[in-house]
Length: 193
Image (cartoon, rainbow, N blue to C red; front, side):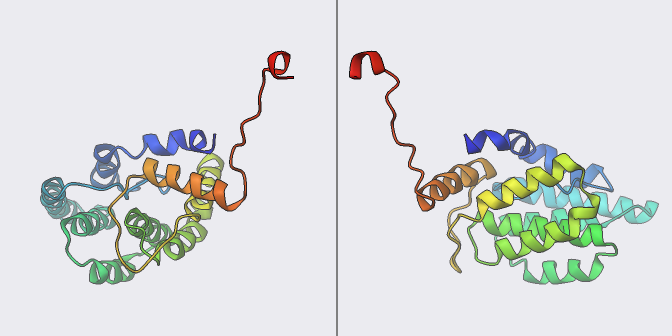
């Protein structure tokens, strides 16, 4: 089944672990899924945590970009407009890797609400991320993005969906679009004829 191919990617979808990657790691994974919905109170608490960590990291001279990205994620789920955050982070991205992480993350947030520019962001992020991906990560992202491309996107935000739900919906739509409706074939030749 197509959904089974994504088990490892879905495991990365645990909100605590991916957000911890942004707080704790100065080089977060490009293959992780950062776009799962977060309840507003959780987003507010994460935003406060990111702000504290940002102050400490600025003082120590560490990489701040992942924490700015976490703030963008929190603002998105708090219902705050993120367009300026996104543009600001585009300017702050010092490396191609940071730019790729921004595009992938923002694309994930957009596709979680089935918003139109999502696939464009994911495609751009993927092309920028290629030199930094391990082979397994590369192929996991290719399969994931190919599957998600089946989703109908609009300019009106849909209800937020987690990666697992998006992949399941996209797999069904993909099968219907390609005519593979999983026809029932009888394995009982001895009784059916």
